[in-house]
Image (cartoon, rainbow, N blue to C red; front, side, top):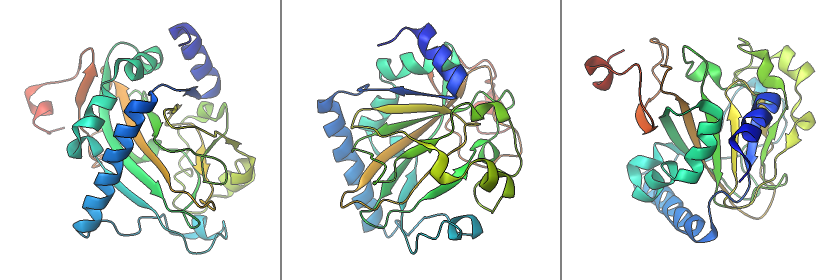
Length: 259
């Protein structure tokens, strides 16, 4: 693995970092089995509706009818996935970016169906769960291949320097995003099973539809510094689970879920 200093330098420069082969093949197979079981359980409980984004920003991509399965908090379903976010190799990369105190915000499964997997317009993540010190990062764990044809992640290197832009959520059409960050112009981060892509919640990113004959399977992990906290008005699920180090903001009220 590259040195923590080189990881940190690359992340600060580009707003993202790709950790190739972070999870080994045997572990990836176990994670994929757990992934498939989560999807099957949600289908069985009638809890797997089409959760593709809708609205003008998606319609302007002109990709036709598409679908997406996702569910939050995969570590609530599976010990295998809880162990994955506690894997020392995973946390070593996160520590190089965030420092020694690492808190789990949430995890989320994404399954892009073959041939009609939904796209995501270019967007920033910060508006969905802003943190006081803006330390929030994402890590996409791949348990299947993700090629450009399969709708892999696309990013704009250096776009994290934008900071907070109010018109970048991706849920509504933005002339600023359309002009400066078209989906076709992003760099396709093609990945193999076991690869993990880390990126800032300011980094502009999105993905094209899955037009291949294969499912694309990923789990997104949101992490923030133990010296940070989520802004009080945010209602998004926050696990507040310390994966490494310490939470410097924890109190009895905080641990009981009160802001």
